Image 1 (cartoon, rainbow, N blue to C red):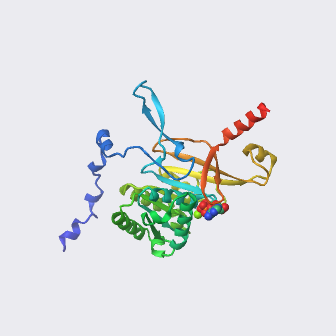
Image 2: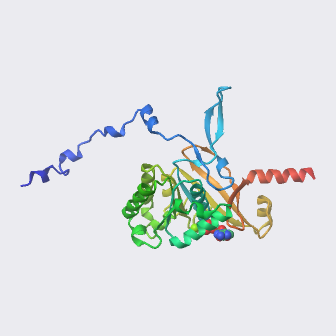
Image 3: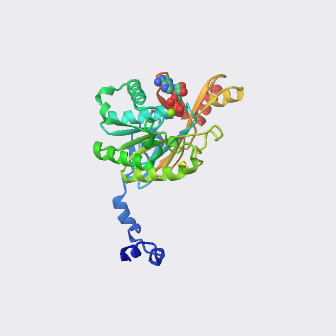
Length: 310
Ligand SMILES: Nc1ncnc2c1ncn2[C@@H]1O[C@H](COP(=O)(O)OP(=O)(O)O)[C@@H](O)[C@H]1O
Ligand SMILES: [Mg+2]
């Protein structure tokens, strides 16, 4: 009998509890390996000012709130909303902005084939006043929309991403959308997202995962296809929503006219740094640029003050 076979981990030995020493860290040791909290300019007007960290003012010794000036570096962000809420535009703006600053970005497209995505990226660059041809090769597109192996077999996608990270020294990953990776098997959502999340951490990526809401989900919640699985796994969740103004009450509430489409943006949570938690108005300009506007509370305050002044 082959003794080697007996030694394989099927026996009692395998089930005996073991100390996993490599999982135990002293705070100081872990801190040495920890990334510094800093901001990455996102290319989305109004977004970068919404993140903070606590710092001790050397003069007063008091703890002060310091703006990050960008989205937190090394964060894996879930960007969720129903269709046509500006998710793809925001993901494109972020990819273009990073690439235009000389950094490599991989854009994994799960919905629209690569030639269509590149047109969108180019359009976004033009709208942002940037010359696409100056940085077009800083953008690496992985076309999982046209390739069913990448879409349906996660190990293939991870292997392809590892190849891209090594070959092009990529620091930023956009996936539009992760929902497409577990379509028709939503109970797999947590598992798929968990593996992708761990992979992003292993490769020190700052990442945006777009996820889709179904019509039954509450518009301004972090819930998306696969339930709350996605938002539980990731570091931050951004929620985008839209609403058609049909009543005087809504018009008054949003400072809009009946028939207007109002858009909203909210940071639902972020475990890496402090952040604004208010509901903000959002705009998509005629050339397709997303801008985060003031918080709704301030719009109402300003309107109220104006009325009082007149
Ligand atoms: N190139 C563009 N120019 C102007 N507006 C655009 C452009 N692309 C998209 N939009 C507007 O932005 C909306 C949101 O688009 P998109 O980001 O693709 O939505 P999502 O990815 O959330 O489904 C669209 O419904 C459209 O009104
Ligand atoms: Mg989209």
